[in-house]
Picture 1 (cartoon, rainbow, N blue to C red):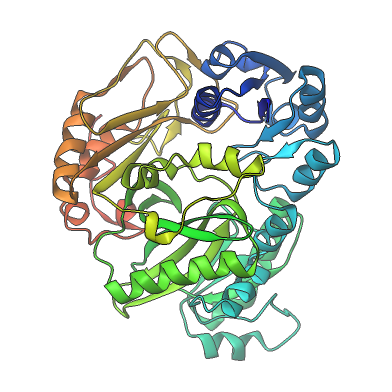
Picture 2: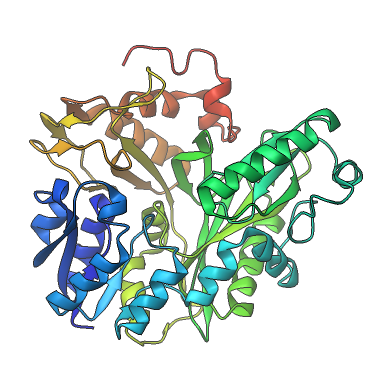
Length: 451
């Protein structure tokens, strides 16, 4: 691998560029016309403009991205997360063009992108799953009997869904068929597939996950993470390792995640996601993400392993070179997603010029940002500015450090989620690790205070 094209933008593009440069790999940033002056364009050795501002005409334009690789002489493509990262068709086109795809085999992307098939693969690997349908729901069948067997409340999920989309809760027989029809219509519009399936709904669930890595012949896990602090099924704060899990469930989650990777001959970085039901003391498979996760830095913090470097090594044909016993998990880490949004105004996006951006520092502090002071946040893309990652020897010390870091972080010119992060870190439920995926919506006044 001599020259890497990064088919993404923002903080993840900067993250990948930095890792590649440290490995002596030349870099090409792709950019829309709106991102010509971005940090990714600035840090890369070259920048290829692939289209106008709308993502569909630039970052999602497969022809333009592959043409940019050819024109710049890149021999590899890293998709980051989002955009084309879990598009098996794009991965195949990259490989057919004679380029190295920094990611899993397209067949793995296809398998895990179909949530019903992924659930079946998980069952075959011994991964625990929630009560639900085996495969795609047959809407012509006896839905009422099927739902009664699973139990209410339940959820209907888009088989091709992801990122928290394509999910509808059903509380009673009365709502069953109408909700399934709505979910099918949403799934068809969002994912070009109306396939859906049922799963039992877990009240006050926690969202936990395992970072796995493999080279197609050997596989390891890099510990687990908790991503339960969410807003409308979108992650807000993550931490590693997941606090308060029973030891037997933690081991089951880790071991079966590795087994799922082994049985699917997985290559590269992947994340197996679970729901944890504290009342029943159960864990259950949600999905597997076939890409680098936004929250990968907290796994790096507790293992000392550079996941992007590992992705590039494996994609270039190297072997893993270490086993599970070689991996040591140390300390505790948090990641805070800092978005250009106003949490006191229904999280309204806040594009505009960043007048100042003052980030904290000190031991155990890392800032992965794709912006700096003086730059303009444009309204065309995801509102993530960057991530603050905090590590310390245990959870209590890491929480104290996080509170200090967030207090010192000041961003002016636009609204951001920093004030909300300060409130969340002080929240009793978060400090005691009794929060769940709907905590933000359920705590009175949490979103109503002045920023």
